[in-house]
Structures are given as C-alpha cells and as structure tokens.
Length: 435
Ligand code: 5AD
Ligand code: SF4
Image (cartoon, rainbow, N blue to C red):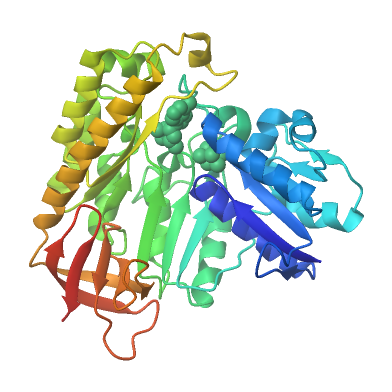
C-alpha cells in the first residue's frame, strides 16, 4: 500500500515517524512521494500545547474526508483515547507512542476502527528500526518522563521513564555507522537521566560512575563515528563526569539544549523544576568554563499562571546572564490533567504575546552578538546540502549546532566535513568561506 507519514512535534516524534517508515517498508509497503499519491496517511501527533494538538487533529480530519485511510499516532492519541475517533471523523486507527511497532500489523489486519493504547509502563516496540539515507541518525535511548513538571502533559502521554539497555543502544549505533552514519544524536525527554530509573548497564565500571557519560564514552569508541549529540537535558545532569566525557572525546558536540522555562525562583518552584535560578546558571557556567564557545540553547514559557511582571523580568535577566545562543519561547497553554491546569490561566493572551515578543527581540540581539564573536574563527562544518535560503550556498552545522552557510567547494557532497572561516554573522546563521 502507498503510505505517507506526516509529523508534528519534537524530535522524538520525528524519530518515531522514521522508525514507522522503516517498519512499513520492511512489510512491503511503498512510501508515497506526495499526499495525493498516498492511500494511507499516518499522522504523528503532538499534544504539548493545545495548538499543536489541533493541527494534527485538523489535518487528520481533512485527510479522512478526502477519502484517505488515516492512522493517528503519537502523543495526542494517548491523551484522547477513544475520543480520537469522535474528533476525527472517519479515522481508521489510532496508536499511542509505545505501540508504534504495531503499525504494520494493524495495516495488515485491516480491521477498523482500531485503538492501540499503551499503559505507560510497557517497553516500547519499534524503536530500533531505521530509515536513514543521510549521514545523521537519531537513536532513542530513553522514553517517557517521571519529572511531572506542573504544566507538562508528556508524562501522561509518553509514560514512565525507561532507559534502553546500553548493549541495545550501542549495537544499533554500530549498525548505523556501518551503513555510513557519521553523526548520532541520542534522544530522550531527559537524556541525562539515562540509566537512573531503569538499569542500563549490567555491571559497574571503574572509569565512569554515571550511566550517561559512560554511554557517551562507549559510543565514542565506535570507529567512523565522528559526531555525537544528545537532547534534551536537565541541569541536574550537568555533572563533572559529563564535562569529563566532553573533554575526553572531541566527538561529543559542544551544544546542549537545556530548557530553563523560567528565571524566577518562585515560578520554578511552582513548576516543580527542581532547580533554582542559581543552580541553572551554575550548570551553564560549568559548560562555558570548559569551553567558552559551548552553545547553550533553551526553552522558555511565558504567561505561566500567576507570572507577574517581576517574574517575567527575572526570566529576561536570566536569559541575558546565561547568554543563550538560541531560545524557543512558548506561550503557556493549560493541558488537561496537569497540575497547573487547576490554576487560573490568568495572564491575558495579549500580555503573553507581548512577553513572547520581548524575549524574542532580546534573543535576536543576543544571538547576533554571540555569533559576531565567532567571526574570523574557522569552524568544522558537516555539509548538509544547498542552503534553503540561498541556493548558491550550501549550509551545514558546526559542533555547536550553529547553521553555517558557505559557497560550495567543487565536488562537495552531503556529509563532507568542511573547514569554514566565518566572515559574517546573523542572529540565526553564520556565513563563511571554505578554507
Ligand atoms: N504550555 C506552553 N509550553 C509548554 N511546554 C511544555 N508544556 C507546555 C505548556 N503547557 C514547552 C516547554 C518545553 C517545550 C517542549 O514545550 O518549554 O520545554
Ligand atoms: Fe514531543 Fe511532547 Fe509533542 Fe509528544 S507532546 S511530540 S513528546 S513535544
């Protein structure tokens, strides 16, 4: 059957979609080039904010009314359960995140409507299937989350934290490298918690006491693997041993995505983030002391219930102190069943919008300033292909995950490593020349 997967949400979903594509192809199905061409469309949904969920649900409804067989996957399925079929008229099946491995069987059975809901505790299936064509691959090392931040629906939809055994992760990484992958990004809701709730290693190790740095070290032993990334992180995991792994292995990229959410200690405590502003800043300092060019990016929420002007200004000043290289700002959206959904959503929409714009403008100026410090430096860039903004240039990423554009040297191919001298800085992009 000709199928297509449409993905909303974060990198976890991007990765899950890729696994489903691989499983479907292995079952003999063909990937359609366009939506029109597809008989079956799998919509991988996000539910982290109300808008995200609406998009996936709306799209699924449109596809079903166009006569497509529609399967809804992902986070919104776990939240909605049976309701998914009421919200999407003509929906054929719905599969929650930990059961995506069942998609080919559901399609083979062809019995609709069908709902597959995991219980939040089972070991996910389908995680190891890959459909990689390029030089980069994602490997999911940890699923679920037990942090229970007040605003976040992820623990409800992705279930309890589970770390995949290190042997399994490393075998998968080796197979990817054998297929030509040069860069692996470890994925998880909170990757630095790897091996904490469920064991990852069968034994102790003399060199590494913490399971995640140990996994990085083992990954870096793989011949031919040139870059290693991981996302997302929590400041509690920014330990000396993590820094030691970064120092010891140049393959470990100098970038961390470290969501801060707020700069106000009062709001952080209400959110249940389990760190203070000072502790967060100490984690950033630890990384920048090791390497001043260490790229730190973040997520911030504006308009959390009860967020005052003073709280907001605290977020603003924290962002300046942390000197983030990039930041994603989200307007608070109450999610049913979360602790904060019981609080009044009392920051007016227009005020959330204003705070959003202020932080974005700050970050634009800050991003430019940070990038200007890199003018004149030579950066190792893994070429990805023609730049989406200017086809005369190619672009790729440096170790800090910064986008670098440059005129392509003759004969360049995707995945090539290019040394680029930076000549121009913009808030979100560096421009240079191959040396
Ligand atoms: N409202 C707004 N933003 C949210 N995020 C998570 N839950 C919510 C919510 N209820 C943001 C956080 C997180 C990012 C993925 O989405 O900043 O880091
Ligand atoms: Fe990712 Fe969270 Fe959205 Fe799920 S709900 S796709 S985990 S951002």
